[in-house]
Amino acid sequence: QVQLVESGGGLVQPGGSLRLSCAASGRTVGRYGMGWFRQAPGAEREFVASINNNGGVRNYANSVKGRFTISRDNAKNTVYLQMNNLKPEDTAVYYCAAGLVGSYSYWGQGTQVTVSS
Image 1: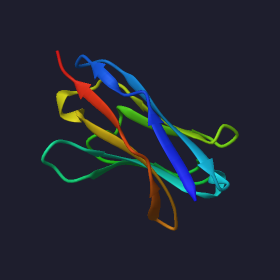
Image 2 (image 1 turned 30 degrees about the horizontal axis):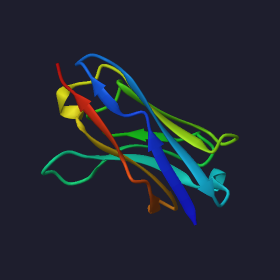
Image 3 (image 1 turned 90 degrees about the vertical axis):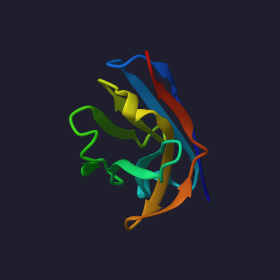
């Protein structure tokens, strides 16, 4: 089992920045691919970014390219999502996920991000 706990969400003004963290525990998380997803009110959960087990491959949704950066520190069992130039449409609950071979088996409880003036 892998347990994931997100933190770092909050209220920020448009154009501001936040850094989300996802602390993992349990099995050796360094072997898992990690991802960030988000779900806005009334919408389906959508992919935001992913990173492979050694950090060499990163993918982003078109809506966040150039603004968000995913990274990981396997020594700390932590994955990060640096979010810059935030927009109101980025408002959502952000979830961290872990998995193997493109399938996410483990999910965190989510952290709320609200972008509003």
